[in-house]
Image (cartoon, rainbow, N blue to C red; front, side):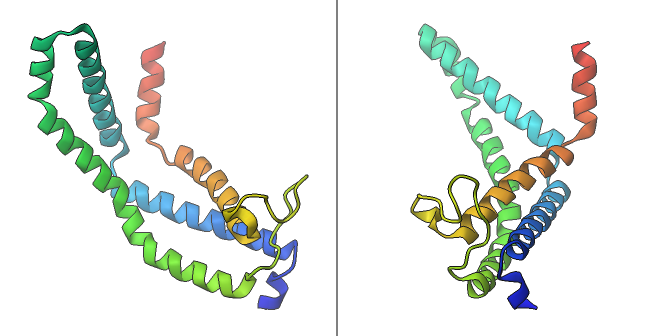
Length: 165
């Protein structure tokens, strides 16, 4: 069975499917472990604070800078919470993904996984000289983008679009 996966197009389709499955799983876990609406609100609050601080510093408004700096501890705590939320999924998947990559490296080794039109199976970049790496990363980026849009908070999207009207 594994021999059948080692040649193109089987290896191409297998890696494409694996990247889709892993991206779907990480997106689902991310959606279950985080509150997208709260994260969006927190990012907005931090961005507004940073913007106000930059404006006040640029204008030389020491009173406003002082006032904003009093809120810095709270903003840093919000940023820390946001970072922890995004790291949860990384911690959950790190070891399993290392094991999967170890297994895949043993199966596919230096074999060609896919051909990139106009370039071939090997991209002329140091880390991407291995077909397994660049093809998985390309597929993973593709599916990660799709699933992040699919699982974004639809309620907030509908609310935001109704406010624009």
